[in-house]
Every structure is written in structure tokens, then in C-alpha cells.
Length: 390
Image 1 (tube, rainbow, N blue to C red):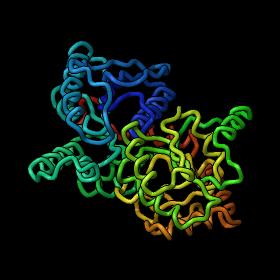
Image 2: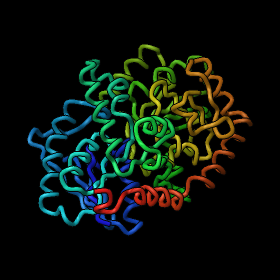
Image 3: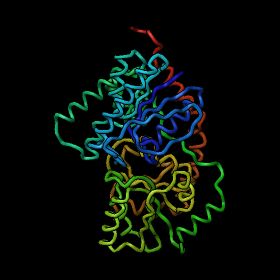
Image 4: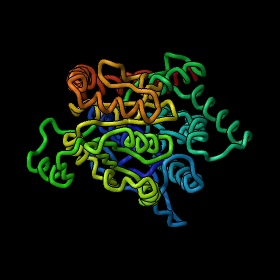
């Protein structure tokens, strides 16, 4: 199958949706399909056999795109639409499927109607919920238009991938269940055996000095609950230190000021973004992994690498986590500083080690690449052949 994929994101950047797109492409190409990816003019190329990357224009020289809705994305989406139009004008007859991500679904609906090529919508989040989570706008007219566009995409797509149970439940209220395939983003590039030299280098960098390391990896967006995590440290002894990996420079600078005001500079380290391949080495050198998210319903991508690491996981007891996590494989706490601190204390106890072992066993059974390939193949099977129903 020849697939035209539309990805309105910087590809590749080490964050949620680009990660998902990357592993979706790897799976599709592993199944023998070819992918022409049309994406933003921002990001690093990835070399995958069967993948070709086509980038849209960047007349305004936009250098970065923040997570969530933004005016920069609107501008880039216009030129992305033009780039897709040109690609279809040149090679329309050779494509068997249009595969879209996020707001690319709107383009997918349009091009499906124009060309008759089946449309697979990869739904990583609700665009309506993004408006709230990222505080992009409160205008009811705009939110109403986005809600309508999202429903049109769900109704018209031939096949829909959703990444968590919350999105499955939402989509099932709008469209037919037979179109839906739930594919959690549990695949990553973690090697089975970690390099001992690299492990020691990370250990030296962290400089434990007898401290118990609490670690968070991921973006520093407001909904991730970083203020809650910092406040929880006030209820833990000096033997605990916090390491935060991720975030944009402006977010790190803002956080540094907060840490300084709270006089916690000696207990919190901000390491910034790391190469995704380095993350497993940092996880392995921690004592507790935390996901203090306070808003949203999508499962955080980090949860899967956390569970595989063999390190106890502490997460807030909200549906964003509990749609995948349970008390057998994670320590769940209420989103309150004292409760989070207590969960961290439990994580460094024998109970924490017991939970971590169960999490590792759970992943080995349920989160395999073969299982991932089967689910991606299932989503393709839901696409109607050319001409069917026309």
C-alpha cells in the first residue's frame, strides 16, 4: 500500500505526537507499506526504509512550534495544505490511503472528498480539549467550529486510530465503533540491554551523593503538574532530590525562578531536553519515576517507558492515568502535595519494588512490537477498498 501521511507537527522532535508518528511510520514500513510524509519545515529527518519526507514551505522563517494550538501552527498548516495539494496533483493515482494526524484530519476529509482516496484519521487528542488545556481561546464560536470539524472528521474517516480509552469513549459517541482501533503508544527505542559505560556516565552526571532521586521526564506544560511535584518536595526529607528532564528554554527559565523563590535550588536539577535514546539511562539511575499530571484525559506517553524501566512509578489518581494504570503496577495518589509525597515514600519501600516488578512483567506480556504491528494492521483492515460504497 502506498500511503500519503499528513503530519502537522515538527517531525522529528522528541515530544508526544511526533514520537507517535515516528513509530506509526516504522510499523507501516515494517509491514511492507510505503509512506510519503508531508510535514512542517521544522524538525530532524528520520531514515526509515520505505519513508520519503516532503516538507512544506516556511516563508516566515518560523523556527519552532510550541506544543498545542498556536498562531504559528495556523500559518504552517496553510502551507502544509498547499504542499499536500501539490503532492496529490503530481501523484494522486499512486496513493491508496491518506493517513492524517491531529488537525490534519480536516485536510484528510477535504482530500478524501476531492480524490476518493480512503482516509485514516490518527487521533492523538481531542482538538476541542486542546483549546482548554493550552488556554488558546475561550471564544465559543471558534471552539464550536473546531468541535464541528472534529465530528465531521470522525464521521467521515474510513478508519480511526485512538491512543487511549478516553479518546475511544469520546469517538464512539460520534462515529461507529467498527471504525475504531485503540493503539496505545507503548513502543519506544529502548534497547533490551543498556550500555554499562553510558549508565556509569549518567550516574556520575547525576552525582547521587547518597540521595534518593525522584525523576520526571517530559514536557513542562502547565497540565503536567510540575508545581504540584515541586510542592510535594516540601513534605519530603533532605534525602530526596528531584531531577526534571525536558522543557523548552523559556519554560526552564521560568521554573528556575520559581525554584529560587522556594529556596529549593539545592534539591532540584533541571537537565533540559535529552536525546530520546539517552532517556532509558536516566530512568535506570532514579529511585522513583513520577507523573504528576493534573489536567487532561490522554495517557502521558512517558508512562510506557516508565513501566518498562523496572523503577517504581508514582502517578496521580486521575483518569488520564487510570485508564491504563492500576494499583498493581503503579502507586496512585490524589493530586495533592502531601499525598504525592507519601506515594514517593511508598515507592522507595519494599512495596515500591514489588509494584515495579509487576509493571515489568505486565509490559513484557502486553507491550510487544508484534502486538503493535497487529494493531496497526487492524486499523488498515478497517479501510474500505477503492470504490466500495461509492
